[in-house]
Image (tube, rainbow, N blue to C red; front, side, top):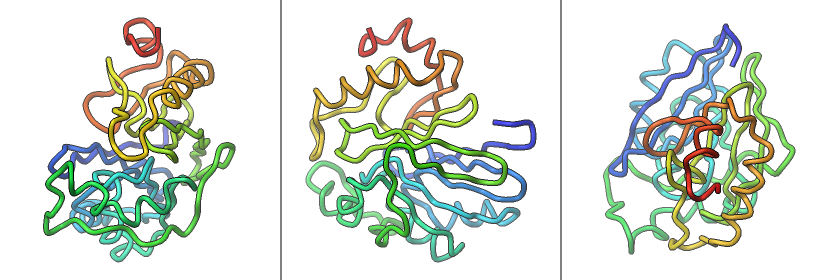
Length: 210
């Protein structure tokens, strides 16, 4: 990120999802509003939300999108292969998680579907879309200047689970091998849950990247 950009973080929902707001030149990109869309919108009243992006279609990353979109009018973006999953997020997670919270609802149909090589911009920041299947079929990573938004693909010391619907262990291993090559070691990884890390730290210590 450049010196004129800032990052805000909200931890939302029962599974403590990290929702990020990248602010640049008065514009704001919100990544993974999994719950509390109204509260997130209220916290961002001082900026103009121009995009809402989900790294994948699980309920804990998309069920605040609808409220945030109503409050801001911002378009909703998601990986092409997770668009259908997202619109049934609550139903598809209800057998595993208690998802019947009053502030959760399935997101609307996406305004834009993302694929490898696409870019998402906010202010003077540009994020490259990297396809990252494995945790779900259509997961994506957003790679910017010195920072990457990982969703649930990679965590500090761990990686995303593949035992949920849409998970594929071998696909995730291929994704991690690719990310190890394309994300510079000094890049700060902002994960969907838990603390931030760096790619260099994960290459050195994460067994899933060995």
